[in-house]
Image (tube, rainbow, N blue to C red; front, side, top):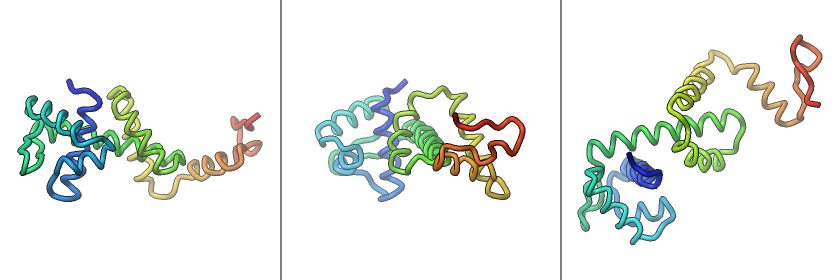
Length: 155
């Protein structure tokens, strides 16, 4: 089992690899907002655990096992971020919060969030309840209050 910090490094390495094709210590430091010596220390630890291969002048690459973990962490991050955006959390905040939540949620919770995100995004039309939710967020009042049985006002 890896620490949250180690998972963040693997995810960052994956993201940089996908963006640039290669990863340097400096890239990881910039992405994670840490100093290069801290990156070298963590990369060396991950290298010893066979999660990455680190060669001082060639950079950092994920091993098969490291990549598999990074892909899972990235998928959790992306799903949670999508969910937060669906409920009108601004993108930058959603990204930051997803970084925290991706490590803390139970796998079943993450799966159900994923199912909801897929369900909402694959809906043939913009779901009316999402429009109602947006209106509720803007006004504090349910747009269907008093119109349909079972709806209550925000009182």
